[in-house]
Image (cartoon, rainbow, N blue to C red; front, side, top):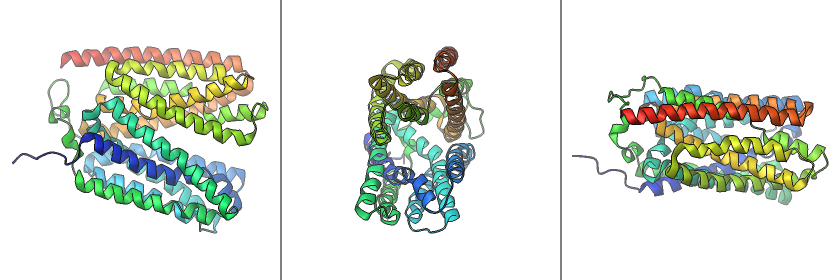
Length: 403
């Protein structure tokens, strides 16, 4: 007998998964908002804090090169997803009760490893449902819910620190509640939709020539060109760290105002994700032309001495991040067939991470050297990105015509 299909609508699957991400963000973004002060309270130097957080972020991205292919080969998408979330939500509450610096350092890194474990599998599961809802808008709604958690988490921790007089134990311990809800929702979703691949037709498992795609099939050329485009864009993308450095060191805004600006940028992130996702489903990959434009706008206005322009630059930064976290992931799902999709997500994220690190270093160095040189360099980099996008689009159209 044929399978009756998933017992939840695709939209309900997307929104429940988005709620999972919202609650998980409350947990780990809440913890990340005080990682530096927490480690310092245990005796860490600035060097230790920098090394630990840097290793953690590198692990969250680089290890996806391993977890992605393993997910495809084992086909245990739910197992990888649940294991990754479990590692994150279990480690965070323990951060608040440990009295040993190196244990805390290990927990910080372990939380980031959890993100590497789950992300390729999670994005693949979500991609199946977005085949029904629309790739762009499906990933956009997920990202918007995610960002609500990113705002609530730090606010929750800040409120608990005020109530307890700066005690990290209760501030992080309270995050066990949303962490438990994450695992409960995941198990429920796994029970209701054991095979999300049923949202997506079987013929997506075939290449342009009609041959089947296996877990060892080469990734399409359009995917690699797309990775080159996104990586190039990120190399010319200023980080919020450099933006906030400019705000404070130039005396434009007090340090206490920076988190407020960041929260506003996260709101812009959610709005831009929804807008770009909606447009992507209607006009296609050309929507991504907004990304190089935003990347150039950011340094042009954010590194001035006008507070209004600086804030506008921060909002543009948030909008760009919204596109990166939603529509960029949607395109991967359209370029790569399901049997190789987790591998593709892992490689894509690792490349983005390396490019982001390079971009942060480049823009930081150029900021110290010359802001006009920074703007000119970013303009040149984004022109290269646009050229790569044009080549990728041409190949994509050719592949579509061949089908």
